[in-house]
Image (cartoon, rainbow, N blue to C red):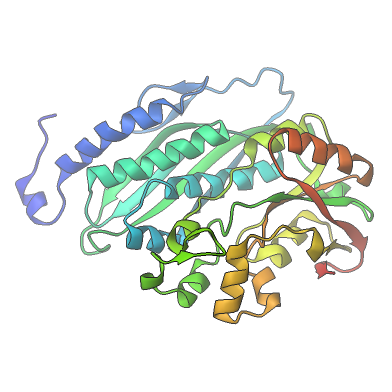
Length: 342
């Protein structure tokens, strides 16, 4: 491409780096192609031709989110090939809470200086996340913004769209007292609460090997967010999932009530949770009260589902067949909204 500007480059924006980055990321986008994805990256819009056959009343479900200050850990470790998974997960895990199948994804990277190799690493993670979610990466934007971001820093956000049959949308109004709450395990902190995490652990500590973690601290903190699209869709094809809650910022106390109608509350058993060691380390080193831990982090539950009590055991069995260490963690009870930990 015969496109360049010495004046723009002198001002801090090298458009040729953007072209090089585009060349590097195209193969990663190509491996996410699914039926419906049209053309390659580089146009003014991402194209997707949906196939709604077999769906009586299609409803499009969209979600958008970013990675947050977890990116600071990636900057400190100069490791950028997993945060893209977080970006995809934060979006698609939200839309599957409606019962929607993810179709396509777009990303947005804003940085102080385009490093084609770093952009490639980021988009590799995005593509990995899209493959895990079963959706196509159909477009995005990389913006070089000198003076707004430091040269070696960036922000990352995404946008996902899925489809569901209107009659099969999860519907929390059907939830009743006695229903079971099923927890799907998290892979760790996921992508929430990192402002608190970074106030506890210094940058110098990131390279320290922690026996109870079985890994270096920074490696554990960068563990990417788990994507629940495929196991949850497999479950909803066999079991009536009434509602679902993606456990993000606000932890169990804020997110589980979003899947329960007014007049009901959740009762969750601490003993049923398989809480990873990183949370115990955070609580101890930061002297964080237990209440704050459950109101900030997922505490080992990345997704919570509500089903009829009579379906709960079969639901757990189906999820286990999908590789998920799912377990019944509580029940819905009468009373004002909220969560009781017992």
